[in-house]
Image (cartoon, rainbow, N blue to C red; front, side, top):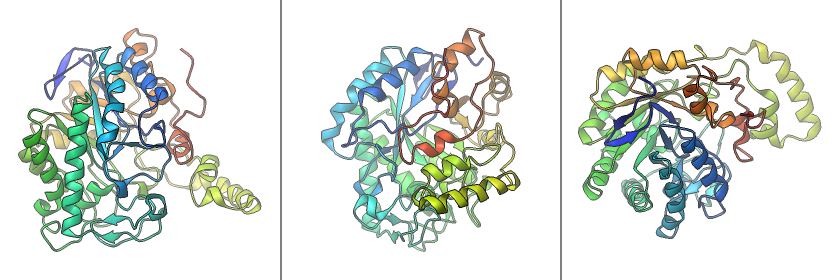
Length: 399
């Protein structure tokens, strides 16, 4: 079942294993995909990934990532630069979906050159400058930005778009009762909290006939008074009525630490090398702090379970929607993939970390060379992106 040819949102896929959106840090200074990124995606497609979802692509100037080399599609001058990327992937009969995002308060005002925005004025645990509450006019402008970016994506040859509605980014903040405590038409009831997303979906569907629109959703965000599975069920129902074609089930937010990408222990050496403010500590303070952090690291309680941690929520959402469900999160074994799909917990599997160290992972599975990823889930890759392009601690594992 995992390796069967099938369809999703009218798109033919070679199998049910997808590459989940991963920030690669391989855009040029203007946000265009570089040859390294094109080659990377082409290699994934050549090695039988069922579908590729790009790393997040910025739709607005004030919504760009604090991480280096983010992809951007916020103006028409960038559209043509994506055609070589989609053409390279399509040579292997693999669909490619553009993930569209606005970082909201999950960036720094210094980075974007203006005060960052959010549903309401509030700070972020790791990006401490306060975001300003968006006006209704600013919200409508962001809706326009998402729709315009979707139109550019279609023109560039993408097969659909995925809205980033998870992990603490702007759309997630609107959907979550934790991030959205507004009392106007953009907040309060589930329908109002969903309004920015339903407007984006409806306008894309009206303007770009038949163009698939997916969403990545944090089914639970682990914030006090935030998203839970009951909220997510209702949200998916509302978005499905608006025309949503598919939901990818994830969890957590950047404020949540390593809940979204779980590891057995916190990778402290990488934390102090790549994550601010630790990375900017003076040498002697960093040395002392790292020694202390490594001493207490084994005592830090990590989220559980470590593997397949969104499968249950995906199954609950699937029971309450008629659109395809993709699940991501600690899925590394072929046996687990087969069980999740065959039991009806989800329709498709997506992965991030296994493809960073083994971009030919699906080919290996198909050829029977291995039945699980060699990724050790250390989360080095999830921290290095704050300063450099994405890579595995051990490099690309030899074929």
